Image (tube, rainbow, N blue to C red; front, top):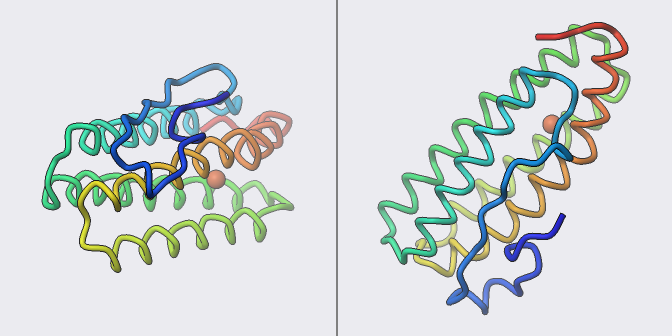
Length: 152
Ligand SMILES: [Fe+2]
């Protein structure tokens, strides 16, 4: 799957318009709860993308980013609980990916005084990370949960 955001050369290309990431069955993990969270995450990503495309100011972009980050915290906690409850063998590695992601987004968010340049940089990073993580680590987890008959 390719999106414009993944192929752009951010941040120097921040005049560009950023594509939304549409849900596709490729993202399905086999776990309905995780998939519902991922749909919401992508919707928040798309709101962020729209705000950047529209050239919204610092306050708006910061607000949308905060929503995305808050929801990401909530979603990661849910996935991590599922992993712990199901004795998922890859839990430490997966948890580390989550922690690193949160730290990276916090770092970027804290150091730049927003504007479209920050938006473009984050969009590129988020688009790659979210799709890569869902298609890789989360689908792996989904298959494990499916095999164990764990559905929530
Ligand atoms: Fe995950």
